[in-house]
Amino acid sequence: MPSPRAQIRGVTFTASLLWLPLFFGALAASVAGWLWGPASLAAWRRARVQRRPFPAAWRDILRRRMPLYARLPPDLQLQLKKHVQVLVAEKPFVGCAGLAVTDEMRVLVAAQAALLLLNRRAGYFPGLRQVLLYPGAFRVERSEDDAAGLQHATRRVLSGESWQQGQVLLSWEDVLAGAADPQDGHNVVIHEFAHQLDQERGRANGAPWLGRREAYGPWAAVLGAEYAALRERLARGEGGLIDPYGATEPAEFFAVVSEHFFEQPAALAAAHPALFGQLAEYYRTDPRHW
Image (cartoon, rainbow, N blue to C red):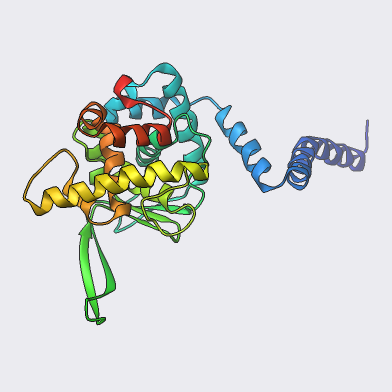
């Protein structure tokens, strides 16, 4: 019969063997990171996340809360689910004003944001460090300069905001409303994450990274003309499809027309074909066929 010391040694040795796969797994990840660099290591981690089965509870959330998900073609549904897995894994969600963040909140925000990534080789909003969720509309205070150069403290009530410093602020009440009606042209998640795309290379100005320099000429010509036309229509007291908030500045125009593109694509294509064409080329999809 082995001595107690021998038994203890055997247990210790067995435990050590159990740790070996974890040790070599961590070592492999470290070596991969050293050999490939941060970008390749991130891609490896994302691929590992996307190989996991999509949770049934998450699928139920999409079916209950996001009617647009059911209209997507099967290949885009699969893309969207994989994007959701990555966004939930990588982006921290922080509850504010007493809100306790749930999986439903994470999944529903991530799924609507993922619409902007379908068919594209872009990153997962690389400048975004966290999503701040409020129960409803929230107040933001800031200092602004008037025409005379004097600073004034202003307070605004918002349903969403995107900060270049790496935060997206959202009202959960408005997130739910935007997902529930995919045809009204108003979606706070699409709006604020369009700003994140616009902010990837600096301050939002209505000209996100288009992938190649020669694309900026047509983009500026079409969106510039449409932005000016919107402001002129509003000055004459005329309405139209595009929400008046888009006339605030070029960055807001891009975010607003992104909402219309994903939620009212047929109407946007009919009323503003050149604008729709630029957005379809940028987003690499045509929501008219969903």
